[in-house]
Amino acid sequence: MIYIAGILGQTFSGGNLGGLYASRLVAGLGIGVTTILPPIYLSEIAPRSIRGLLTLQYACCQQLGVVFGFFFNYGITKNYAGTQTQWMLPTALQIVPAVIWGVGTFFTAETPRYLLSKGKVSEGTAALVKLRRLPEDHPYIQDEINGIQAQIALETEIVAGASALSLVKETFGDIRNRRRFFLMFLSHLFSQWSGANAITQYSPSIFGYLGIQGEESRFLATGLYSIVKFVSTFVVSIFVIDFIGRRRSLMTGICGQITTLAIVGAFLGATNGRSATDIASDPSARRASEVAIAAIYVHAISWSVGWFSIPYLVSAEVFPIRIRSFNVSILMAFHWAFYFGCSRAMPSLLAATDRYGAFAFFASICVISLTYVFFAMPETSGRSLESMESLFDRPWYTVWKVAYARPEDMVHSARPPSTDDDLEKSKVVHDN
Picture (cartoon, rainbow, N blue to C red):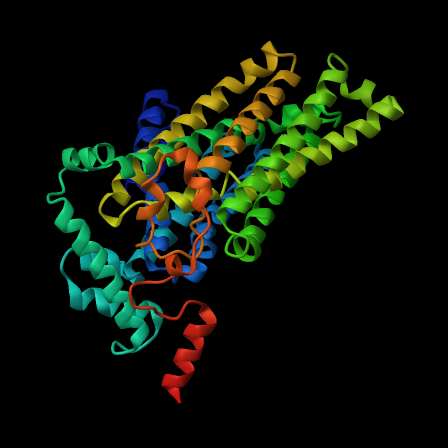
């Protein structure tokens, strides 16, 4: 509702700049909440065997929104250039998904974990029954309820009270929670300062540096770039993230970013000062240009495999339920601050470093992040949300020794079916 109010204010601000800014502030307050809740909600309702797949659908749909936004703006600009409609129509169109989402919340169950944490056992059980489509007395339902209640009871016993100050103390006063926070803080920092979002925002200019001639061609190349990011995120969420795991996905993606950033930086260094027309007229430069353009698209895929997807997913997995919402909220605030900082710095960085230096800088950040991930990032794929504690009992630089889950880390205290196939078999047996 707050977001919709902000969009209406922007659309009908009537050219009043103060009104436009105030409305954007209101819309920002609304949209900020919607960047925090989806990964938390999805991680709390998803069977752990497909938790990554479902949580990453949020990230995937973010990229789909970028695709829609680009082509809507492109089409509207071509047909209504220089008119009020050019900015009012795409601004107003944001109301459509907001209304769909708002109506959809009335048909959505509260998470069982939240209801059980508030002592609403019958409501929490009913929500889990609805989500799993199994009867209340089914062993899978009972085991999952018991596992959630045991963890909530432990957390409640350790720390009582839920004021903001107590949550801060719990986050930074407990060394395990502090390690969780700084792991994810650095993950969001590396994600944004690896440069992918800044490259996206300034991709028309960058494609011009790489030899693509004509404004329309550069904008279409940017549209294709957004499509590549969406498709790669979608493929990763379905076929990769829950099969090779978060840690392997992240390191693979970072290696891809380092390689492609080095290629683009080397090309820009070799062709510094040359125009797109000059590059196109030189056969060897043109071939190198094609390689660099391909590298930009591969970079988008690498970022989707790694730093784009993983912070959303792991942030919602590593924190205990008691402090999860609090910490994810803070981390998303830092996420957007890092996004703003990197995007704001990009034009100056390109100008001050003869273009190629910006890509060398981003590549160096990726090298640092790869080193950190190797030592500090645990594998959370397939783990119960209640099995994370031992990972953070040790210093960050020793996590690599126990990064991958053992068989006992993959189950609740009372073992439910471990895969969707097992769940399906249980449903078949019950139906028969």
